[in-house]
Length: 292
Image 1 (tube, rainbow, N blue to C red):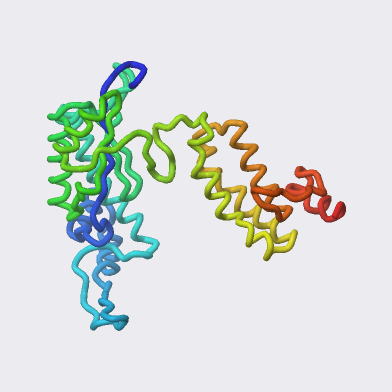
Image 2: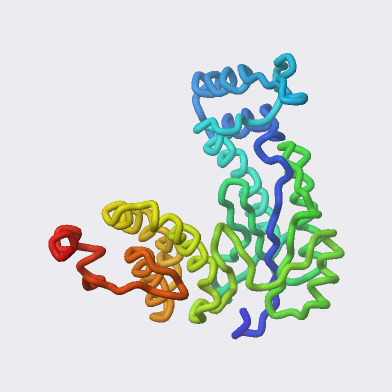
């Protein structure tokens, strides 16, 4: 959109107490419309209605009381039920787009419009940069709240502008009564809109590595324990980033150095002597043990 000099908005939604405020009647209606069998829906209803809760007052729980809405935190079934409920918001946005009430972002003149991305209670809405588009989006979210009980906390929502100045973003934030955000921003643990060819954009990954491979951990673990930590835990940390972004060589070297320094028990200021080639030390434990 920047290359085509088009304007667009990205609205990051925050749902207030999402799992605690979902209406059971609304969820049952969604399951019915999605043709779930009556017996299965009855099971879900029993699970929801059997929930009880209590309040801690000065560390002591009060008498238990019945719940009338919401999903249980920690229940492995709750995320799946919540995803089914959020399908209603997806359908509402799609219907508004088909009627021309809400205009999404098009990458090409004949391409399908991008209107929203949903991941459980993380919602991002995309649209053309216009006041009418913004007002219709607010109306859609209001209608969704009235039927589902999921209230949008506008004070914690953020709006980002693509191809527009900060003053325009501030004016649009006043329309939404939300925060004016700046690109790049963080969503689902990733930097959105950042130049991932720069080392500074990979600082969250480097910081995570440094936190996991702190000096005191190296002193309390044996050589075999350090190898296990590096191979089983640390090597998987940047995989999420690597699936979407191509890491510069400087980032790979920086991550490699952090692992190498941790393995030999050194520090960032003073690295210890590497007695075995790094290739053998990390990936071939038998060879490393023989060399040591």
